[in-house]
Image 1 (cartoon, rainbow, N blue to C red):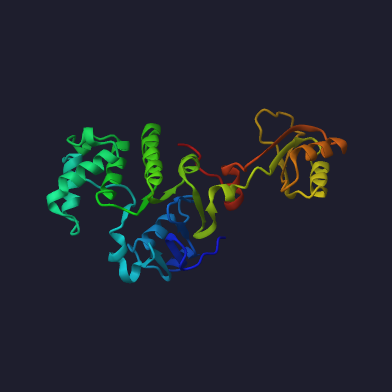
Image 2 (cartoon, rainbow, N blue to C red; image 1 turned 60 degrees about the vertical axis):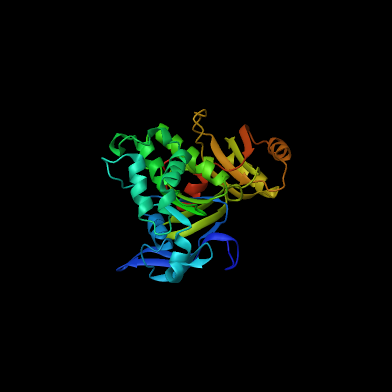
Length: 326
């Protein structure tokens, strides 16, 4: 797990953050570090502690132990100094169904004591335009599609300039079109320089838009860092062979690490005798590995080399499957 210093450039940082409900520990001493400017995917199965962590970070609930900073500010002591620079969507949007999108945002804008009422219309229309809803601004909220409703919720978070956006399951319950709309919006917000934390259980969503990842399992943060670094570089080898034990031995002798043998999962391979051997080649050239395997008499049915599949990586960390739709 990444070790971070208190004065590093992180938009969100926690130390030993813990939450217990009675005898149950929901979040267990996590040290989260979200770099400034990152689109940070906060991954984990349902019930792993993601939303509870977000609620503690935003000051919505108090931690049992530990502390957290947002934009270098201790939220428990000086929350007002930081939270006005943060936009958040936690546990779904809530709007008046019989009001238009513009009227709903106007009500929220009036409630912000930092907002100048003389420029409210300008802010509301700018936020609607940012999420692609300006043409539907006069339509009642109840007539919005699920994707439009999520985009309106993100517009509400953008009424004032925000340095950090925290979005908890922003595509939950959306159809493929709505998911694409919200995903594209999140990517554009990150490209504009905002730090975005996206809590999600959709691997395809995270892989397409995020630069960094944090993975929760049973209340613990089991990994975090840049996406490319966590998945590994181009040194992961996947070998299909009927001589799995011999192949594993040859690769280990060549200096490969993390050598594992498992049943073949490639649907193109129907031979029950074929196994899959995975290994991190490190600096070993793939061509030399294949030549050594053939020279040792290992029957090579297939050989691939590249970055680790995100789903395989997650399963290796958490020991369970994951929703890859979206």
